[in-house]
Length: 146
Ligand code: RB5
Image (cartoon, rainbow, N blue to C red):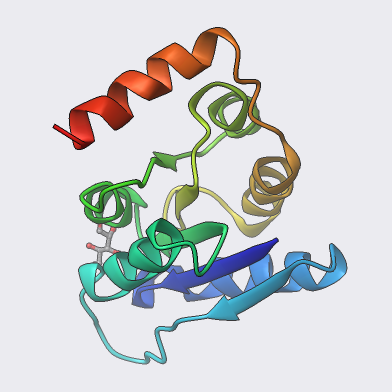
């Protein structure tokens, strides 16, 4: 599995935490910034990561900003992306099992590094269940392809 990860200035610490988690989990990843001591614009980081997942260059993406909201809104504009903003472990598991999400967004001003690690660990390993969910996810894909 190859993961693309990025954050704005509001998500640098959790980005580093998740990179160290992926090192421990032996998951391949590439860091797309930001290299920021100053304020940057989250779409400049969310959109390239989402495009790399949508075009198959990467299997999954992880995006962190202050709230996770801006990152998730931007990523979900890219066709083929199902990005979930997650701040609890139950949702991390459910959104992989039910929604087959391919991008995870989190907010560093909302949760701490310990919980972010647990969320990412679950989200990175949990499998999509398919079955009854395939029809539902399929309806989203059909809408995108209209
Ligand atoms: C940056 O101040 C902040 O707006 C950003 O990190 C994010 O929370 C946006 O949704």
